[in-house]
Structures are given as C-alpha cells and as structure tokens.
Length: 160
Image (cartoon, rainbow, N blue to C red; front, top):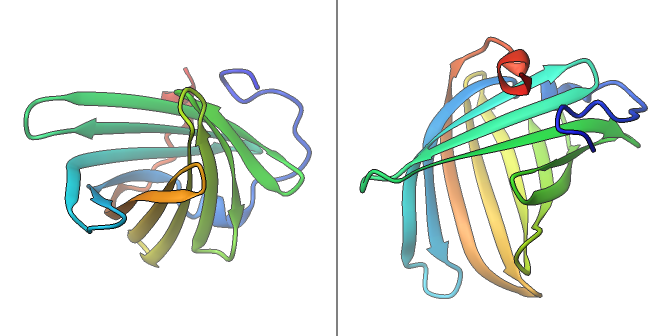
C-alpha cells in the first residue's frame, strides 16, 4: 500500500470508521496481563481522517519523563474492511456497528500481534482495550480512555 493509501480500493468507507474522525485526547495505561501491574502510562493524541475510501491516522504520545513518539498509518477499504499499514504495523479494521470498531494488527519487526476494541461511549467519548499477544500468549492489556477534542476531518493534514 502506498503511503497515502491510494492503491486500488473497492468500496466506501464504513460509517463506523467515519464516526471516529477527528482528534482524540486520552491516556494509555499498559498492564501486565498476568499480574495487572502498570508497566507504562502516557498521554495520547490520536488524529483520524477519512477521505472517501481512504484512511489516515497519526498517533502522538508523550510521557512524564519528556519522551515523545509519533506514529502514522494509512489505509484503504478492501473487501468491506479497512486495511491499514504504517510505522511498522500492518492490520485491518472491521466495524461491528456505528460506534464499535475492532482492529487486528501485527508489529512487523516483533513477534507481537494485538486486537484493539474501540467503542464510542458518547458522541465525543470512547474507550479502547487492547490485548497484546507474544505468540499465542497474552502479555499486555492496554486500556485507553479518550475524549474527542476536535471533530474536524484531519485527513489532509496527516496525508500531506
């Protein structure tokens, strides 16, 4: 897939994906799957843009110790799902309904895969739960609570 997600596509963006467009601010809390111990916590800004059958997402993370990270993903609709790639991650999203999305992904440089369940809990609120797998073993659970701080479609800002 090209960086801008402009490869061959075959259908319209599912409405459940469009419902998540905008900028989401929140906190990621990573816990050990066996002990529940907090391994990591950081602030996040997740920007989601949709342009027809194309998708773009930029995640910005900040830690209390000053570290920062930015990840960018592009996608396109194929066979009723949104195939997404970028920043060493490849996967696809499917809509369960207008407010719930499941993303299945794999980190290309590691033997890690994950399932991210994203549920809108209000017009401008959502919760996410990731199960991170090392092979067939769940190693990390990530809980994310977000609020939408901007409803403007940011596709052009991400895809430039």
